[in-house]
Amino acid sequence: MKKFLLAAAVSAAAFAVPQVAAQQSPIAIDDNLEAKVIEWRRHLHANPELSNREYETAKYITQHLESLGLEVKTGIAHTGVAALLKGNGDGPTIALRADMDALPVTEKTDVPFASTVKSTYRGNEVGVMHACGHDTHVAMLMGAAEKLVAMKEQLNGNVLFIFQPAEEGAPEGEEGGAELMLEEGLFTNVFPGYKPERVFGIHVWGGFPTGHIGYRKGPLMASSDQFEIKVKGVQTHGSRPWGGVDPIVTSAQIINSSQTIISRQTNITKAPAVLSYGIVEGGVRNNIIPDEVTLIGTIRNFDMDIRADIHDKLEHTAKHVAQANGAEAEVNIDLGYPVTVNNPELVEEMLPITQRIAGADKVKEVPLVTGAEDFSYYALEVPGMFVFLGVTPPDQDMDEAPSNHSPYFYADEDALRTGVDLYVNWALESM
Image (cartoon, rainbow, N blue to C red; front, side, top):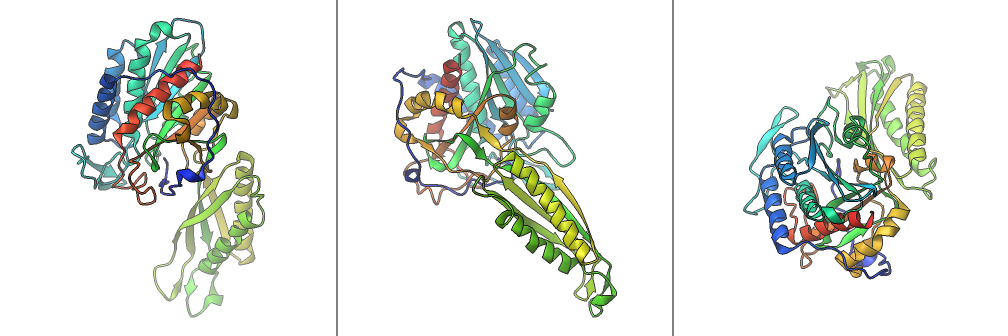
């Protein structure tokens, strides 16, 4: 997940447990396929690649998909892979998505397949690790592809398998991820005539016991936007502040004033929001008032209209506070991922099969998550459902388990079977 550690592990007991519905038995993979999924996951974990650089990962996936006889398209959004399974009926096309990229994190786990890979990130040599669990996502979807191909004659529809690069964000100066895949025709031109009618995604979660499922109807994960404010003053000696315009004092006022955008100007009963500063840069010497200060921060929100309003208010506040001090403020807001919204009707429809796969007592409604996910772009195009899959052994304290993005992040492989079964049965239930 982009720029977010899923460290806020929440107790399973805090979530509401929905009632079990329907009785049909789900399709389950066998031990042989589970073993393959684990093998694929370990290979991917030991060979991670950064965003937009998933070349070998894409080849590995493509080789498997082609071995299944699927129609495969590569090079979408740089390294993305998509495959189409045409069923034996005239039903809808269902999309299943997994992300492929790893993080610039040096692994510190003691698993025998731990990553020792190094790469370059922002000009520095870094370790590379699947610290967010995307290796498990890929392996589970590869397993789902194999299972669904074996059931081809029983499918009254089609399945679009999406292996997506750069969920963690494209390198600086590049485009990538779900947004670029869609711009390049993933839902329209890659397989003409097979636009999916719904899309599903899974993200493993270090703050939840193995095999437990966290879901939410409507908004699930926040939008994620970065802003940069350049506060321009007039440089002067620190002993003579009246001789210039102080951008440091002005910046302090902008920081304080902008906090009222959330606390006093936004209806947070409709949707929570966060505006945080992470970088304040300016000045080179204790007795020189500089001519410029840079402020950089993030905005998280769960409503697209409120999101736009916060952007307008931030620009208004920064410019007018600066003007009141005789300074100038340039505001640039870099739009990140939109709000990840689960289609309520789709979630309701899929809850019974999800409960039967995982066990009703293990399917929990989770609170809003202020992390962001570019699965959101797919869900803006067609009804989507995105859930969290717990991967921390149940005998471990959830509050102390390493979170996603940690160099100690550990994904219990016992959860992989559940993930494959979810992909397979969601597709079947949708046809």
